Length: 418
Image 1 (cartoon, rainbow, N blue to C red):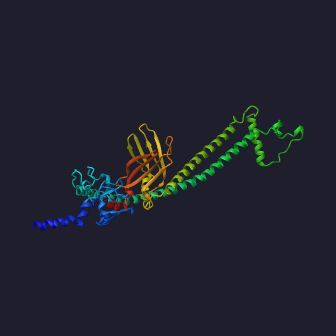
Image 2 (cartoon, rainbow, N blue to C red):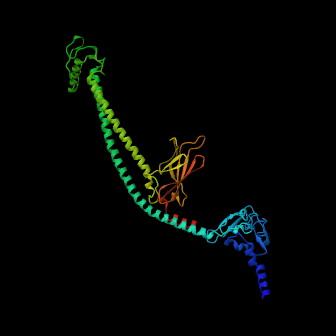
Image 3 (tube, rainbow, N blue to C red):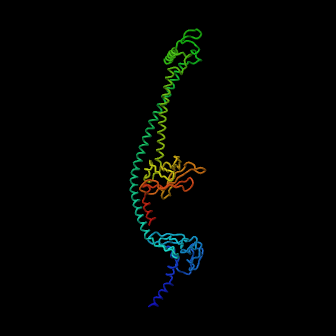
């Protein structure tokens, strides 16, 4: 009986199956077929064929390190952590048997003195709880997104109505503008007429001192054959000249001229007011049209961000993001710097609404103009989660908002966490 047991044990120790289990470490199940016990082993990059006994012998034979998946012999090698109950993953082969537990199942320290407890089950349970919380947040975010889409539709309608009202106001102001221009021209014409009446042409007969109605050089009196308007003009001239001697009174001091100038000034002031109002309305129309031309998502789910700014303090700086407008940075002394103006969406083709770009900010000292990239992530609140400056004059922000939640986000969370 004892002899039979020893023979069975010897057979198991010498069988290829046992040799494979004992010798082949750090290989995933999908690659196990390439490490079956045979006479030779082909490096995965096809560069070399070596005897199979040289696999995991702590000497690097293949340039890609594929012959030493379970040792630290190859600098570019990888060790596969099985991590049953948790997520499997690779670690650099340099970490194998280095006295630090990198795999949660402890499989990377099989020959070291370090006793690594198996924590995979505990980590798996913790991650599943976190996944459940994440899924609850995503589901809540999707519900909030539906509300934002409904609110966005109302905001969009209000903006359209506001545009119509502004355009109607601009048309009314345009009519008033033409009317005030005519009034100004009329007041200027009346003033010019009165000035001519007060100050007769020095080259005319009257300007040479002749009395009205007297013929030149003592001749017979002239009879006015002009129009009624011409007669009234002369009568007005005579009356004004009797009251105010042109030789002693400046036309600017004449009360009639002053009154005419006052009418001109009033017409000019009223015209200027209407012009300013018209220009202001046209500017509002232009700004509103520009906003309405923006892309706010396939269901306009991001429209609600139009009138909302979010802030975050990092160290001594206050960062303010106003979506579809600008990004600024203010220090403790109150100095504000523009970090970029809204430029457009910059996400990948399959998720274009995952990143915003803000450029043409203020120039750095001896550097380029500042710019900011804003990544959008799903969340139940709309606020900034992080602000960084990964390189000079380039800033990165993470904005969480329900508007960024989607079914793809939900599927991605499941795929990444499990």
